[in-house]
Image (cartoon, rainbow, N blue to C red):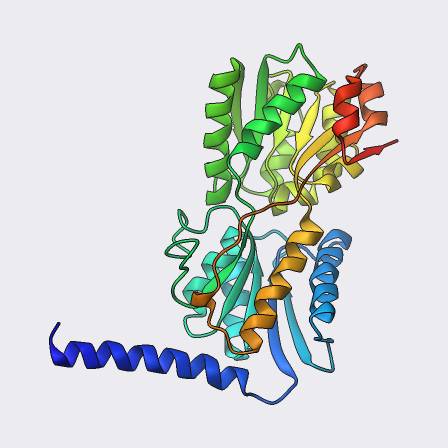
Amino acid sequence: MRRREFIGLACAGWLSAATFAARAQRPAPARVGFLGGSSSAVGLRLLSCFLSEMRNFGWTEGRDFKLEVRWTEGIVDRYAKFAAELVRLNPDVIVTTSTPGAMAAKQEATRIPVVFIAVSDPVASGIVASLARPGGNMTGVSNYFPSTSAKLIELLTEAAPNVARFCVLHNPENSAKMLELQELKIGGQASGVGIDPIEFRSPEDLEKLLSSRAHFNCDALITLQEAISFAQRRRIAEFALENRLPTIFQIREYVEAGGLMSYGLNFCAHYGRAAYYVDKILKGTRPSDLPVELPTNFELIINLTTAKSLGLALPPALLARADAVLE
């Protein structure tokens, strides 16, 4: 390497380190931006999970840091707009949820540390260079664990043995869901069941689909979690029950809304884990020095009332494995 190039790279590294060190030395309160999907009761609860864990690390909102929150309410186009708004406030760190949120932050926040939550595959999405060495200004916790997608098929087949074809509701504009859909197709082939992808891109698309059973040429329903379907989770559960479709989702809130089952992350613990990264960054650690974490806490939730309404006699072994059975 030529001397001039070496000096340039060395200076760039020094400036990067100096930037993070300077942020860590700013007087309290620190400034934390939060870019989330939904301001519903569930969204606020998950934010409280993050804030609770921040307190466990010694950071109290209002005293030790000021929080700037932006909610997109499930409208993907708002991520870029609100990410730019938060960048203009020049916070010490930005916390963002979902793959679209992380990608918007990557585009807008090139010099501000970013901690992401619930990103399915940050490497495949181009958000980080690798899990062990993220590089750049971004790191966080991923919710991507390939085997959990195939597990949805396994669990629903155990609950409803006669199921032969699954419809999969998903938003194709969410790249993370396309990765999960591919895993489901592979799982379907291995299990000998059909997979019928059903796309929606807006609340209006989803409502149109739910207007008629004719759109669902299947005998069971998988819904991949994202903001639009989450906002309509009660409508999806009601439609499935009316049309006698056993359902499985990726988070428990759908089951609380009347769905049959869910298998996936404990999202409160997932959001809380982001506080670890924020604490480290506010104390001077560079995001590039903090490896991305993969999910470790999964939970199975079953709605027994919905099972009875569908005429399903759930196996005792399945009920015994559940983390919670709702009645």
